[in-house]
Image 1 (cartoon, helix red, strand yellow):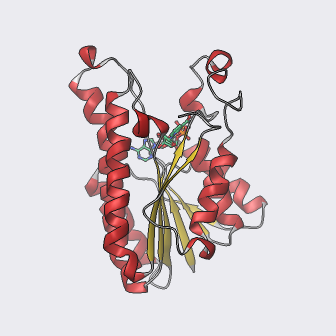
Image 2 (tube, protein in one colour):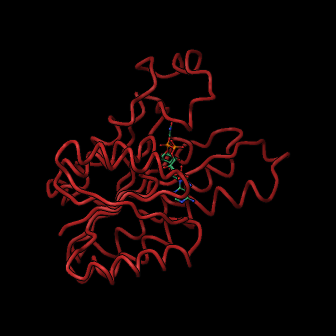
Image 3 (cartoon, helix red, strand yellow):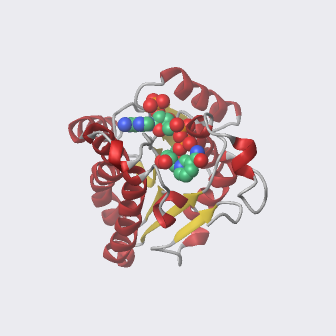
Length: 241
Ligand code: NAP
């Protein structure tokens, strides 16, 4: 069975990506940290569309938790291969740097940047052995241009962008591509508290994006058709730079 693992697949962009992976024919491993009912909703939507999947809860920030969950899954599914990894789980905890607590800095780096390391390193050897793999990292416009109030988040996402470019060069000859997708403002729980009406005016297309618009690009990057694209950062931002 060919599988796709989507971290943070329970809500928002990860939910839309999980559904798109199922539409490509992958059995989808839906990761989440604590939102089981939302993760079950993702699974129900996949099954309603004729796809298959399962839940795999773990905290991407906790290496021991990642190792344990993925080791157990691999032992229980020796004939299945995770050939697509979408590193999507992310949090924000905004503050001007002058007021930022150490925990705010660490928590955001732990989920996005260290989470990328924990999950990717675990799945890389099977992809290299299999001579095929697709790794897609969800980053942000914030990691490309930097956003005031988000030094922690911008640093985490910029770190993943650097890792994407470096890892792409390490694994290209083994049929594994590594790319990043950088959304702008996408309508999810993460952006529900910000003033959409005002901020949309700063976006050239004059609106926030939908999770499905990000998922469409991720699906292309996960497919065979993207074989000659690696080490790229592709924006889905309505023209916002
Ligand atoms: P969201 O609606 O807040 O969903 C976040 C997802 O990540 C949830 O499924 C959540 O699961 C999971 N998650 C959080 N911490 C986790 C952890 N430690 N371990 C495992 N799963 C964890 O966010 P979103 O807007 O869809 O964002 C998805 C990705 O896109 C993030 O990386 C974000 O930085 C990036 N992004 C979003 C936007 C935007 O405008 N929305 C823009 C640029 C980039 P639980 O509920 O179980 O915690």
